[in-house]
Structures are given as C-alpha cells and as structure tokens.
Image (cartoon, rainbow over all chains, first blue to last red; front, side, top):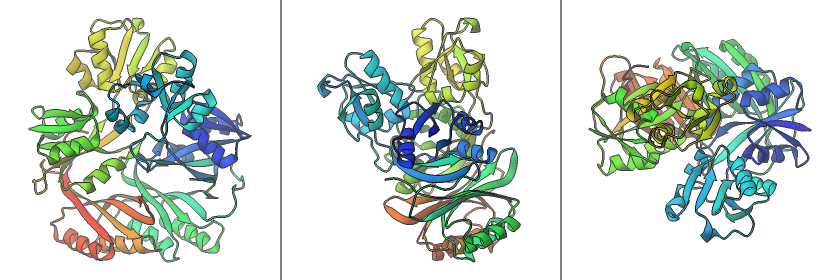
Length: 276
Length: 276
C-alpha cells in the first residue's frame, strides 16, 4: 500500500503512517499538501496521511480546504507526539557538538536546550528529517541535527539526547484519507464523525444549528469557526462529534443540521488508531 | 512608547505595531512569545503586540495560554496581510539571482515562484527579516531574500519582485496588550470583546453556555474549542463577540455565561485599528 504524505522520509507524518497502517505501508513523499491530495486523486497512491491540527499551532486550515475540494473519506485518525531528539553520526561525543541543524520551527521548540548549551550554534535547515540526512551524508565536523527517532533510524544516526523539546504537550493529529466509499480502518474504541458546515452570521444561527446536536444529547469534541474567504460575515464551522454517521441519533441530527445550515459536508466516520 | 514583539526588526509583527501605534512607537524585539509577555510584566516595555491567529495556519494557542497566564488588557487589534517580496541589494538584476534566503515557512508560501524560476535555489534562514539583513551585510553573489516591504526599507534592500506569495488570502491578526486597566485605543468602528471559558464535556453544556449570548441576540465572530492540557474531556473555548463588555446586553450575557461555565475570563473589549 502506497501512502502520500507531505515532507521528507523520516518526517512526523511518516510516523503517523506507521501508526495508522503498520510498517509495511510504503510512504510516498510530496513537497506540498495539495500534491499529496492530488496524488491520491489520480491514483498514484492508495491513501494519503495529512496533519489536521497541532496542540500548540492550531488547525491546519489548508488541509480543511483541501478536504472540501476533494471527495475523499476519512478512514482513521491518529495522534503523534512531536518529540525532538539530538542526532549525530554514531560515535560522536556530545561535547564535540558545535552546530545543530534543523527546521527553524523545531529549533525554536528546543530553546531551553540551547540556553543550557550556549556553545552550540543553531543552523536553520529545510526540514527536520532532511537535516539528519545531510549530517549523515556530508558529516560536517561538530554537527548534529534535531529530528524524530524515525529519522535517526532511517538515516543511521545515533540519538545523543532524547526529548529536548521545551514542551512535552506537543501533539499533531493526522487523518488517513482514502477514496470515497472506502471502509474505516481500526478496531474498537469510539466512533468519531467530522463535518464542516456554514451559516450566515445572523445572531443565534450557530446556536440554532447546534440545537440539532444538543437536543439529541450528542457529544461535541471539536468546534471551530473560520471566516469564509471573500465572504465577510460568513463562517465555516469545523465540528467533530462522538458517534457514527449511520447511528440513528447521529443520522437524525445530521439531517436536522442540514436543514438549519446553508452548507453541510460530512467528511467521514472513523476511529482513532495507534499509540499516542 | 516601547513595544515588545517576537522576531527580528522588520518582522510582520513590527508592521502590526506601526498599524496599531504609528511610526513613533519603538519596537523592542524578543526571541520568544513568553519573553515579550514577561517584558511587559516587569515594565521593560509599555505594551506588547502578539499574533493571535492566521488565516492559513489557525489560532496561536501558545499566545492564548500566555494571555491566561498574565493579566493584561487587549487594547486593540489589527490585521496584517502577509506579503512576501523578493529583496536584494539596490541595482541587483533579477536575472543574476541564484539563491533566495528566507524562513522555510515563507519559502514554502512562494512555491509557484520557485516552480517558475527553476534556476533559483531556496536556502533556509532563521528569519524573514534576518535574511534581508544578512544579504545586505554579507552580499553573497547572486543572493536575494524573501521578506516584508518593511524589512526592505529597514535594511536598505530593493524589492525586485512584489507579492510573490502563492496565496493572497494570508492575514495575521494581532492583539495590542497593555497593563490591566489600560484604556482601549483607536476610534470609531465596532467594539469586539474576547473571552475564554471552559465547560465540562457533558452533551449540551456548550449549547447551554451559548444560550447566554443567543438569547440576547449577541453576534459571535469567533468560537473555537481546545482540549484542556492534562484534563481529558474538558475544553476551553475561545469566543469573540461584537459589543463592549460594559454594554448592558453584553454585561448581562457575561454574567449569565459565568453561571453556566466552570471558568470565564474576559480578555478585553477593543476596536480594530489600522488598514487591512
């Protein structure tokens, strides 16, 4: 099974692919999110795995837009803890490290580490996993990289220090996408249903829309408004609820919500897969 | 007036400071968001300007956390359009450019430009404005940078190409923060009130909480849920509504919401300032 993702081999998205589909799924890297969606559309891959939100950085609006543009099914979700490790060629002594390469966002998530080791210079690189690849291939003297454990494994690096990130509560949630009509994966655990709807921005319209769920005792686990591009005062809402779209209660609620909203699209009913 | 922000001189946050406080406010750069908050707390600066959400990348949860940790007043908001320009030393010919330096996030927002000019190599740098500074000081042959117009002005660079970003709908919203009790700035335009509240995750509790606003015909302009750290199944909600906290309707609604929610904090009532 071939699975598109955005980034380089060893990226956290590849970790998500492993959690969702096991070690035999073949990751197929793309430079951009839209290229990962397009690869699935034309059948170059069997599935795509995309980040949808991060506990520190918020929802990835771009991927919500792409979910609406295409007609795929969410067949699973997983959460990956973002762990940053200091990685160098095997045998390197920590005391010899003078430069650390990584993506600036990763470097900025390890500021306590750099404050403690002032001799070490931060050097921006294009990609976390790519910085491990470069350090392993070019072996610049005194160089290390910051990336995932998986990147260390893939490129043969040794982890000199584990978990050097400032904030351990850094998780990214990923969706597994497959062609429309695909069956959800995973076993056990609760069903979740994700949907997008819009209302005009008259006072109380969102409240009325939510009554479709509240009056049926459905449990919301995400609700987020987003202004519509080029349509001032209109909003899209991203909503996740517990339950499967074919359960009677959920089905009735979605029918009712469809009456109250200007637009409604159900993105899929799926389960959480893999360790957190 | 001295104003803390995160980033280098010439960052988009400095553009936000200009829109909010005019050209005479003195920007005081800090490396991290929490350092900008801390600088205001100890009185090193008179105000701080922080990004709170971006149309592509979502809400900056870290700054919501810091808003709750500290006790400041939101005294204004502004929206900055994120425009990426190709900047080089004056007199440089576009045909001579071989490398472009910038923050990887900015480089990734200009992929159409790079697809069109395949001879040009992308080189990651720590910061957008910092890449202009470097190109102007070190003058590497065939080098340009991608950054704001303000960065070009500050470091004396010339804009070779304007607006090379893929997506023009890229805006960042900033809050102006001042010590508790400070008066809101700006004149005219609608009042907005921002608040954070939490409820347990029993079905219908959010719906009940929103009734406090809906039953008074108040208009929501943002609503976003966020799981509480370390408290599974509990949520924080970020909510913006139109109106000032001292207006009778809003005051009553906030009192009612305070009864229905486990926790409620009003972050401020303020107006939008500056061009969009």
